Structure formats: structure tokens, C-alpha cells
Image (cartoon, rainbow, N blue to C red; front, side, top):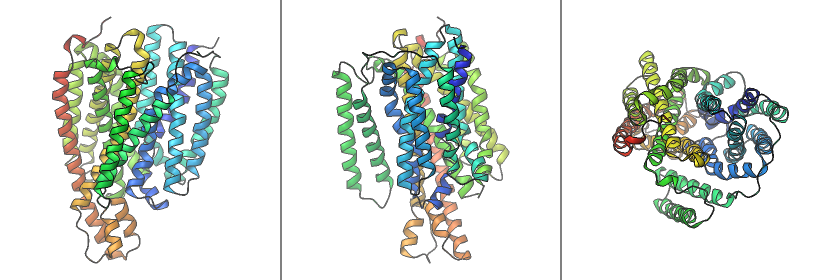
Length: 498
């Protein structure tokens, strides 16, 4: 019989590339805008299609894994992840890369439930299982935060496709480890997969996000955005109706009627939106405005990653000592305060101050995330722990996708409305440069030196103003959420001693 800790090592190898791929493109985005001629909107889709598709497919893929067994599911998911990685590395256009990233998400959505199922079935002792789940959570959070650092290091020596090619040898090792390291087990036969409901949810989310991006893009017709929004809302209404009337719904509606679970989901969504959104903003600002290399940008963000990883192990102790509600409020307060401070900091001249507040943000956001997990799992009945865990996983992935969408789109919207470009630009160049900083950089490449510097100076000034507005707005939203959290959480469920 295989040692459960040996099995955990296999699980870690399976899960690490999944978490890294969620954020590894943050420092690659400026390169893609040049190499693939990708617009700002396409860059956002390249980054956020991965978590959005994964969020919608996690639940049905979990059910499929219960049917066929987690080992077969892990092998199929890893093979698909490897094939999609090769397709992404060989992409020669933004559209192909978006499609490859969506395929990567399908593979990831198969692997993640398999890792959790392997933990549940091989760690019988509750204390050992909690320790294994803690390690699993750390790999997920640490991998996502380390993504920009890994991406920057690879870009320092290789071309942009290396951030995907590196997955292929890892997948080969993982397939061998799964074959030899995971015990064979039989799946069940009666649990419905609900793939059609998952695809409906995915279509709904993608259409609503497309409508939001289309509306914020100043060149597009608002009528198209309104039409797409209406289609998305109709699909959303249909999905909710199916969840209410179906005998085998994708989501357990009973869980979503509990106050603490709703509060935990909102907390997880907002915390991930904030953390991922800030990481996206700072990655682009360091490279576009301050002209850091991808590797330098990745290293600059390291304090955020370290603080988040170090705060994780202490969060459980703090929750047990002070209660979910108090720790959630404290985490949100720290995040809101740090975002407000970071909104007015020069990342080059005040780097030490920036690193300090980034550490506060990383710790505060991680503590809030752990409080949301504790709230969801504590409020859920023991026989519905798996369903509650799936809802939590969806919240994390959806928050990641929304963080990229909201921060990226609003940043571009504020930039477009505030930029004051040089008057000597041609009509086409003026329109492109006013859309986003990445497109202004592309326009600047074709200008003489004086015009190029004038354009980049104007674009940098507008981006910095956008940065300030974006982070201050995020800070205000977190403050409002902090007040709501104080009143929404039921005090009686704050701490689980049993």
C-alpha cells in the first residue's frame, strides 16, 4: 500500500502547474502585445479565460471524477493539460492562444477535483487530512502568487512560449507519478455529471464578461453591449431556474441559503479580485511605465507573495482565537488600508514603502481568504462538505477571472478618458494609442525618437492616474465590504470548536 504522504507528494506535483498558470502571464502580457500584436482586450481574454472556464467546469468535472475514479481523471486531465500547453506555446495569434488557454482550463478543471478526491480518500485521519489540505491550499496560493516570478525568470532567458513549454516535462513526470504513486480505485456510477449545466454556466459567465468589456471599450457600440448583457441575464435566469427545479442541480441551493456561506463566498470573491487585480496592475505598471524587465517585475512583487505564504499558517490560529467574523473584518481592513496607501506611492522612488504595504496587502488578503474558507466549511453540514468545497473552489477561480476583467477593463477605461496624446499623431495611431497603454507602446515603436518619448510620457501620466483611481476605488469597495461583513456574519458561527 502506498504511503499517504507519498501520495500527497504526487498531488503537489499535479496541482503546482495548475496554480502557476493562473498568473504566470501577468509579466508576459507586455511581450505578447508586441509579439502577437494583441490588443488590450485580447490580453485580458488571454489571461482571464483560464480561471473563468475552470470555475464553470469544476463542479461537473468533480462529478465525472466520482464516476470514473480520480486516478483516471487525473491522467486524462494531465494529458489534456500537456497538449494544451504545447498548443499555447506554438500559438501565432492572440485568438489561437485564447483557445489554447481555454483548453488548458478544461484540463485544470479535471485535475483539481482529482487532487481533492485523492486527499479525501487517502487521508482517513481528520488531523492528517487537515494538514494535507493545508499544504494543498498553500501550494494553490503560493503557486498563483509565484506565477509572475516564474514567468519573469523564464522570459529572462527564453521566448514567451517557454512559460507553457515548461509544463510539458512536468506533465510527463506527473503522469509517471500518477501511474506508480496513486492507488487504483473504482468510481461510482449513479452520480450525475451535469456537464450541460456547467457549459450553460460557462456560457453565461463568458457572455456577461464580454458584455462588460465591450461596454468599457469606447470604440464599441453600447447597443451591442446591452444586447449581450440581456442575453447573458436570460441565460443566468435559465441557469438559476434549472438549479431550483432540477433533481440533480449543479449547485446545492440549500447551502447557498445559509448566511455565513453567502458571506464566505462574497468574501472569497472580493479577496481574490483584489489580490489578482493588484498583481495585474503592478505587473503592467512596472514594465510599461518604469520599464522593468519581466524578471525584475517578478522579483519586485516577491514581498506580496512571501507575506501571503507566511500569513497562511497563522490564519487558522487567529481564527480559532478571535473568531471568523473578527478576523475577516481585520483582513479586509488591512487590505483596504494597504491599497489606499499603494495608490499614492511611486514604485521606483519609494520601493521600501511599497514593499511594506504590499506585505500588509498579502497578509490581510490571505487572512480574509482563510476566514472565507472557514466560514463556508464551518456552516456546511458534514455530509455536504464536498459540495461546499466545490462552491469555495468556484469562488476562488471566478474571483481570479473577475479580478483580471474588472481591474484590466476599468484601468483601460480611466486611461482612455484621461490620456492627453501629442497632436501630431495620425488618426489611426491616435485611436490606438488612446485605447490602452499596451497599444500606445505598440504605436510608439513606429515613431521617431522625439515623438516616441512624447507619446510614452503622456501614456505613462494617464496610466499613473488610472492606477491611483483604480486602487482608491478598490480600497473604498473593501471598506464597504468590511462593514457589510461585520453585519452579515452570524456571531454564533464565528468559531468552530467541535
